[in-house]
Length: 262
Image (cartoon, rainbow, N blue to C red; front, top):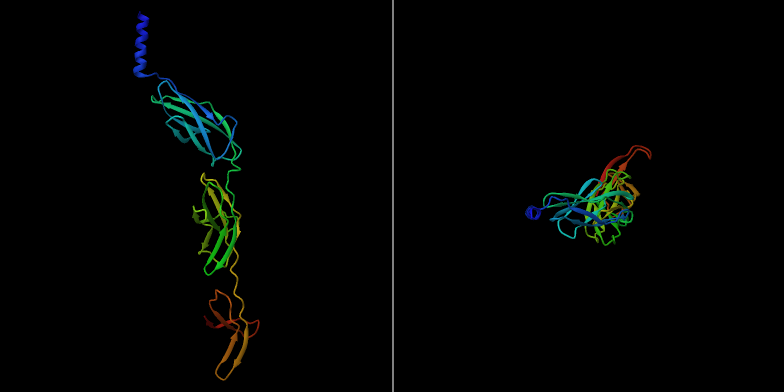
């Protein structure tokens, strides 16, 4: 009778205060040695004698910040920041209402995102106009397209590039640069970004130098007692600004501007 009474009291205590046991947790997918890419679905099984408050994912000894507090437990782990063909250790933790913490077995997987990047786009046409340089490129066609970014640099390796333009519209494939110097080369590239943050850098495009105006040739020079009249062929350039007339004591002598006409 005494043993039955003790068992009854123990049962009451367990019912009233719970049991200080550690939750059990296991990673169901991915499986060990799997190769994964992009946003990886991770599923877990977690059990406890009382209840599991939440589960959390750790990678290579660091918390990912991914948690789930309701069954079925799962995460979507974004692998964009991990190197291609790199091995990583996944561990899940489960915490119950008493603060007890259980740890899963380690699952080692390989990340390979070589096929995950959007197709790079190149500048396929340009145009000089007064005070601006227009760039055009082909539209991205990936379903997970997020945005374009246009970068410009004064060096061909783009190490000091600046961001000129961002757009999250797939159809916005033209940018007009109004701050470029038409008398020196600039370097541009189109960057395509997808919804997971994968970026593809397009080929580097070098701007042309602004073409100089066509020369205006002197056609006649006439004299009278009061003046000398000089006539020349007109400029046909669409960006014409002015004529400047020079004189010199010889063909190879230093020139001096004598008049400007606009």
